[in-house]
Length: 115
Length: 113
Image 1 (cartoon, chains in turn orange, purple):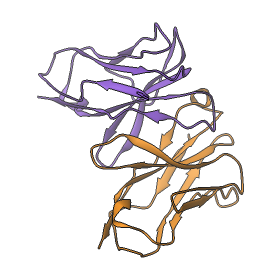
Image 2 (spheres, chains in turn red, brown; image 1 turned 45 degrees about the vertical axis):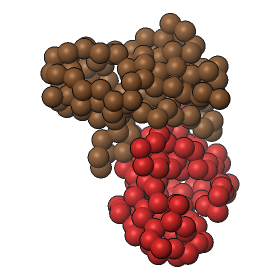
Image 3 (cartoon, chains in turn purple, green; image 1 turned 90 degrees about the vertical axis):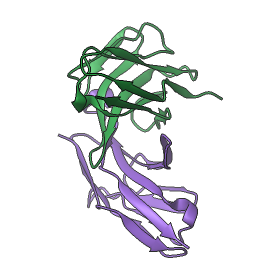
Image 4 (cartoon, helix red, strand yellow; image 1 turned 90 degrees about the horizontal axis):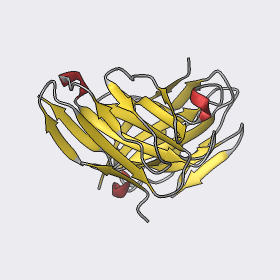
């Protein structure tokens, strides 16, 4: 079955440091890939997405590139801020499963950015 | 813009009690789903619906029922609550298949004693 694996947290960085959160996946079909962010006490918000190989999703300084050859979708940001402290989830939707609508999530990576 | 609205935000139940978690969306989305979030487990799909009158099971459906009588509403019913169902529950909706992003509610934090 489909699965998403992302690096374990928590990740602690100083403000303005470079961020990478690794995400790899396995899928039956040709999935769409997503990064969601969850701030404390809130629901999940879409951060960025990519729907085909070599697409780059970007938003709020975050970027991730859909790498089909390595089945990866790593999240990066060049300079993190304290306000980026949150839990980040990598996810996929696969047209070959659950009618292609449902999301299959990684376990989440907690990020803490200190001043 | 209301988006996806979940009620209640918090609930404490005793083992064996039943209750319904409400979810409503005002975006005319076809697809709705329920997930549960547990520490270290990410989010796991409970049930989903691709339109009014159509529901199906996800990864962890046991102990839960759903129905979809209207496009807007997708309630989740716990028939006989168990401590293992203590979790945070999220409802989500999306317009279409594949690359369409899902919109999440703020969650219901449920404790079963």
